[in-house]
Image: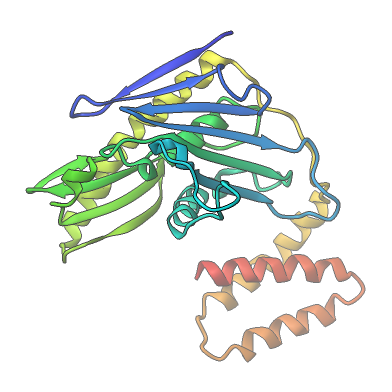
Length: 300
């Protein structure tokens, strides 16, 4: 049994431990995260091939808290866990939003990320640790992923920023946000606060990013110690010559129309319809142009 551990020390002396190689060995990647008496097991599995006609990323992220984590068992006749609570669904979405954009655009294999709370204490809040656990599991797996990422909670307590505060300390906070990021970029911010200035908000995000960078480095070191190479895959076959031809002839025209920010949507649509008719002999042009138009329209 080759168990590999990596420790991350927070500013207040608390230690987060990432452990792999001991549990869930049949998963593509598995990491047990520990902080105090809180323990989260994150596992990831991904199909080797994409399904037929799948042109998107079929990713499922599921966060689950076991009754046994606090020494209880479900009541009722079945004595089984029920459906996910609203809180569990929201934590799953926090993790999903940070992970999903970092899979390769051409990777379409069905992928499952499961984060399970197996032990909990009253002070260490698991929602701020779920993203780190999930990303670490992906880092030690062979699944292609442009990470790692991590998520932390930042609270301002008595005028000072604190990373992943305890549950009791959080009650005194006037700012409480969750930040998800890679080493280079901020991916997601969510939370609540009592009317803070723009500078205070930016300072909180920068404070969170500094802590996330340390956690990303720890994941990279853990992945290097595991030494698993990323898998090769081929889920798309594209005609690059046709793509370049369309880009050269149509991109600038579509971009100029999109940048007009015209409230009358009939104008741009009419232009695209004319372009479609002019290329009626090559319907594949229309598919690519429409996709290009939608992307530029969303980007503003």
